[in-house]
Amino acid sequence: MQMTYAEAIRDGLRVELKRDPKVYLAGEDVGPFGGCFGVTAGLFDEFGPKRIVDTPISENFIVGHAVGSSACGLRPVVEVMFDDFITVCFDEFANQAAKVRYMFGGKAKVPMVCLTINGAGVGAAAQHSQSLEALLTHIPGLITVIPSTPADAKGLLIAAIRDDNPVIFYEHKQLLGVSEDVPEGDYTVPIGKADIKREGSDVTIVAWSWMVQKSLAAAEELAKDGISVEVLDPRTLVPLDKEAILKSVGKTGRLVIVQESCKTMGFGSEIAAIVAEEGLDLLNAPIIRVAAPNTPIPFSPVLEQEYIPSVEKIVAAVKSLF
Image (cartoon, rainbow, N blue to C red; front, side, top):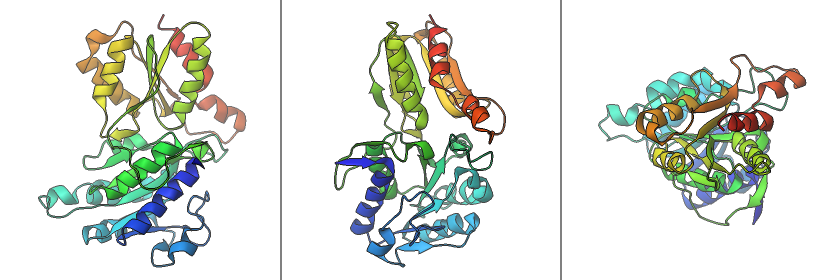
């Protein structure tokens, strides 16, 4: 069935709300308003105010209450409206959600999911456009899910809600309207399993979220010059399917990593380090990262487009390896 990325997430929520009475959704304007980006539209009318809960404008409360309710046996799905606001409640993720299961010797679980939306390209300026996934991947105990397609979004969301660990689930503003055929009803995509979005033999591009779409477009351009590009989407950053990455690099001998976030200490650095440590002999050329510059995201549309990694920059990076 054709669904947009936003509709697929909504459908995944609907599947789990119907299946498990312990699941509920909470966040700012997720109720009658239908969410800041319309993702939760209609769920309030279908499930009512006890299952679809509007919260105060307090990210600390939204995430903190989810830690408590999940530890007490519920399975909350909460929304932090923008990835940028993760910084407001970082203590709840880093010092509470991520550590409860470990500190209680496995006797307490925190089966919560936090939905948040990241990404630039819509003129939302420096405080509403960031991609901060690397901050969260540094915290042991948190799972980080970051799908690039509607089908992956639905399947991974259902898997995340059923997981007994805290999951950060990333949406992207630029992907919400992307449409494709999505399986109906109950189905899952395994957490920690990468997907090859395009087969190739000359160079591997590892990208996630919106950058998968940019990389696929770059692969089309490069094919015109006889360069065969394999595009690998990790789908989840933690746990990371490093075996799939190493297998792909072993086939192509070249690696380009594409991330939307700024280059310094981005998650691409971790991927590069893994390949350098465990697969250096697989490489026929240096690893290259394509990323945003180390600057806040501009409001100016012209500067913002220059900030975001482009198809042209990806193409140039790949060609530099030959």
